[in-house]
Amino acid sequence: MKFKSFTLIMVISIIFPACSIFAQSLNGTDLNCGMNSGLSNMNTTPFDMNQTSDTATGCIYGFVTDLITGKPVEGSKVTASTDFQPKLKSKGQTFMKKKYSSFTDEDGFYVLENLPEGMHEVMVKAENYYQNSKQVEFIFGKEIQVDFELNPCVNGATGELNGYIHDAITGEPITGAKVTLKIPFKCTSEEDFDGDGNYQTKTGDEGEYIISEIPVGEFVVSASAKGYETESESAIIEFGDITTLDFELIPCDYENSGSVNGIVRDKYSQAPIADARIFVRVIDFTPGCGSPMHKVISDEDGFFSFEKLPSGTHSIAAWAKGYIKYSGEVTLETGESTEYDIELDSLWVGPTGILEGYVIDSKGDPVEGAAVKLIFKKVMGTKAFQRLSPKTDADGFFMIDKVPVGELKITARKKKLGKGDTTTEIFEDEVTEVEIVIAKGKSDK
Image (tube, rainbow, N blue to C red; front, top):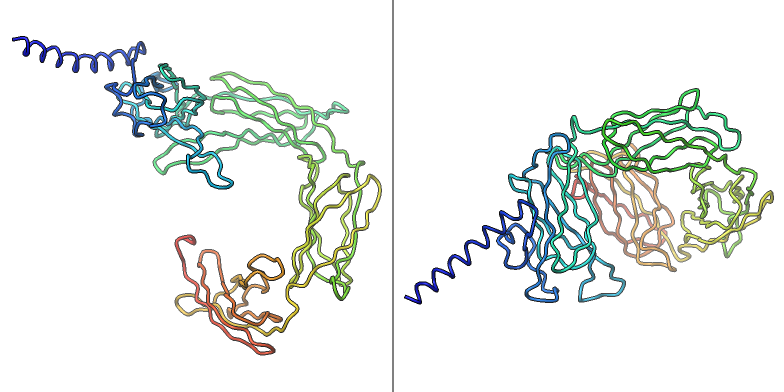
């Protein structure tokens, strides 16, 4: 008799706690979640063995509802992700993302268990709703409620943004200034994600602008105009409200500039190199005031020149066909012209031959405009390849002279048509002919 009573008590103790846990979780109180919780099967990630105790409890739970109607959103995917470093470390290894997922039930309820302690980004995705996410710090033994209100992609909650843009020095309105508001979160649809969205407009004669029907949330808004530094501010868009955000743009400091010029030569013969590409990258670049990257091509005397670059130290690089790429730094002084000559090492100084051939598709038709690349072993510290050919002509023909002797690989690629390759051997002062067939691969579809 005692045995039967003990068995009955055990059955009741197993069944009723699981039921009470589920009922209490829906009320948002005393969830009592942990390894033995009746809701642990909702979590698609197995228990993390790095937890400090086999009896560790706690969870992140909550409800997901429609921002407009307040109704629960069933089937939402809730994911908590955190940085972690694998136990087996390799040189240069960085932190990776570890994810724990669950789905909401008919009441919009979810629970995430067996989480490692620390900061988590909890993100919610549901079809036809904008994504939503929150930063949550999880501590063992704690039951943290995190609710989400999802904004529908269509007929959702929106607000309005307006304001004026003026010159920060004169106070005059700036006409034609561009105002951009970027939506950092995405909208889930049947075809997966539509992608990030941008709302853009330009100012009128009085420097005024207006952007309507913006999803609610906090966003970064940028204002830009030619001859002015780009400015960015944060704006909170609320349901049915008008948010005002004015900008005062600072004119670009074109007075604080200098120039650089020089000659590109062969390091050994000192002969000028024509058609060399020279690049200057402005390190301390001011958005809105010019471009961070500048490029010129040397003339028949190897001469190049850059005008009106910001003062300061910038990176400079040069490249020419058959030469190793050069990299360095150049310092420009305000109102002064800096001389900067460049010497390039030859890619190959040994015997050479000529390579010519045709690029065709899988049907045997010639491919015009295919890019041909020669791949060598590393030579004199260069990269493993060097582009040496113009694109193929209407007959699919290409020709490359002064090709180093020996075995090499030739690749050909044409966007939307695919790529192909072949190998051959170049002999001194001889013409080698090849044919390359290109076709679509997995990476070209």
